[in-house]
Image 1 (cartoon, rainbow over the protein chains, first blue to last red):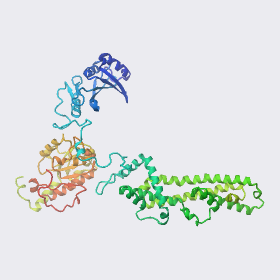
Image 2 (cartoon, chains in turn purple, cyan; image 1 turned 180 degrees about the horizontal axis):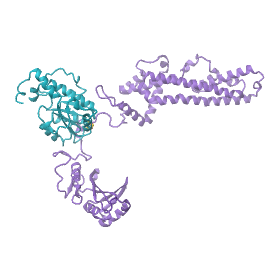
Image 3 (cartoon, each protein chain N blue to C red; image 1 turned 90 degrees about the vertical axis):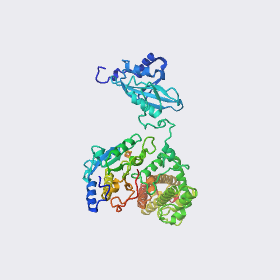
Image 4 (cartoon, chains in turn blue, yellow; image 1 turned 45 degrees about the vertical axis):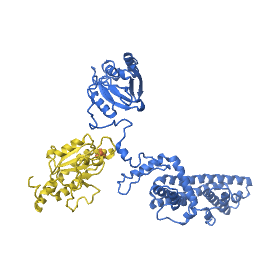
Length: 430
Length: 188
Ligand code: SF4
């Protein structure tokens, strides 16, 4: 201990330490672990005192500083006592751990107060919290941390908190707690309760939803899909219910016995989804309407064919749009330049061209699909929460803009395709 | 106080007397946990409750008029609070500052925490919060001073207290217009 600074390079490694202690203590060293950089030596209770003594006095170890001592509840096996020692000369730390004799009923451990004076109060505290008696301690009574007449050992796992017995924990214990039906429990303060700071409860609920995503999402999606189908016709008509919730969903959920709050929030979400769907579908949202929808801008034949083939309405519409534009261009080109060889082009080439056009249309559809799909996904959680008209309008406007942009892009693409082909009435008829 | 506890003072005298009392509250800080930091903040230059006539850090309980219990009171500490409170001369006032002192706060289910300082000593003003902001303490002090202004010293010395004020729950805070005493209210 002549050195002022701790010399870690002079420290014994855990293996060496263990070997040394095993040499001196024999089979009273029960085992050792190194966890999180902490070397723990398990000692039999009978060797506890000797081990502490050795750690302090052995010049190679020189654990001269008593750091702390505490108990651990080992359930059925009783209690452990851990002493943490530190060597100021070499700067290492060691944990000595022993299992008390006497099991759960009368745990007792040898005291090391005569080795380390500082262990005195630590042992008293351990007695206070775990009821572990220390043999050879001057006096573990009176109780140090609790009131003198305290009954029980508060840090034992089987200690009951009387307040909790009298009154169970109010509200949710974990942020992602689910109720019996698998719904996230959102704690909304009662009137008169202090609300959480800055929508803490909402933030917690959101976090909970994120954690519980997989099952919940699917359920929600199914639910909303069903709602959309069920009330698509109705939705076309009514603009915006004053309550801004989807009444049908709400009624259904209430009938299913969900709590009003959950029903309301789900109905809200359903309402939002519908709105978005309506916006995404553009001016003519339902297929039924497509019949009398203005045919300007789309090629009706293509559209009908694709619908008949079972393609989704949107894909059909956009392909039909592309086809229409192509036709228009072709017609213009034909007008301007009658001598074009396209007229006399062999049919198989035409078919190829048509296929190409189809492919490009496909790609475009994908592109257009991606954009609106992204926008609602981004907004979903907050929008569903808030359901503010302002935000919805913004979203709709944004979507419309996106569509317009997509349409422009299509037109541009069609331009690019155009020079290679002649009039492609065939495409429409094929 | 031979005379004071026998006779109700004439109104103008009472007014001046109470005015003097309310602006010279020597405060004994019983800082027990994190809330004590907020108390200290309230006493320093930014919030500075000395401008309200509250003089912090009385030399001891025997020189203090106001006891501010700020922080987590444990069962082990409770006798000390009671003892120091009893060492204070009448008329004495208690502000319970923070959730812990009000009801046990986040440690309401703990094995060692007292469920509110009012289990041990009577409280005049409860300031809620975990921790309350220094402004809340100022609010509590003003509410208390308002009460002192309207108080009858005779009644106070006789040990009759008004019901405690809970900031935020008992409104209005400062314009409490009924100086009438309830019959033996307050927790003791
Ligand atoms: S009320 Fe909150 S801030 Fe105040 S002492 Fe208790 S835990 Fe700390």
